[in-house]
Length: 380
Image: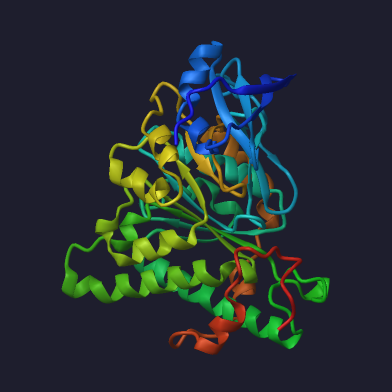
């Protein structure tokens, strides 16, 4: 029910960007009653924005931001620990961090000049100095990732090459699966697995994912597309436990590309939606997570490239903006740390050949529980 009564405000606590306060709810009120009027509160308080940051039974906490922290983002891109990259800022003023150990797979969509490729550059800069392998799927003929090939262990520029690389990745999964079963652990990060045997993490960057699913001639290409879709979905489903992580990028991602895209989307927990040209892509990225995030994404201005709506480890959406990283900066980082790139032949030397689907017993043993952390996963 709607309760037309003045809110009972708590103490106003200053923050770096504005202030925060707790409000006691009247009987019959819920946090959603405040979520619906956040824009009205921002105008009434004459601030840039108001967000509901937390709630307890009978209370909600609101945070007001006096100015937009995303107007100028000059924070440097940094490696923030293994498989963590600080790529920019959130609208709360906190760093925008992609943490693959917490959120293993990401969907990154955006139109041309929206900042989608800039975020990929930031990931190259942040991951290059880390002990990880980088794999690129560049369906633009290689123009996106070829400058960074020195730091990459493998790069595919045609769909047939992508199919072969995905087969290799599934083979690596099977090998790591056998390793984990031998040591009676559910993932490669378990403390019982000796450090000397811990495999190298692999981050897979996929550019223009739609090209993997589009078919000009259904009769000739259907088998290849089916193989790519099945293997990519398998990597997404099992990759977290075995140190393989995905960043899937695209300008246009919609359900019209086929059921494989929708199934893949369900495995990509992290969502990044820059300015897009069509509502279907925004819905694919955010529609199944939070309707309010979808509205915010459609309001992104082209005057602020790099701005996106992000849903990550918290499960709540935020506006974010990536720091500007030029292609030259990313290429320099790739060249500087080229010696850290493991040879693909070494990564696949002991990989099991892919002759068919993984056994159902294998899948049931190792499909990760999204609610459990790496340390909480118990031995088989």
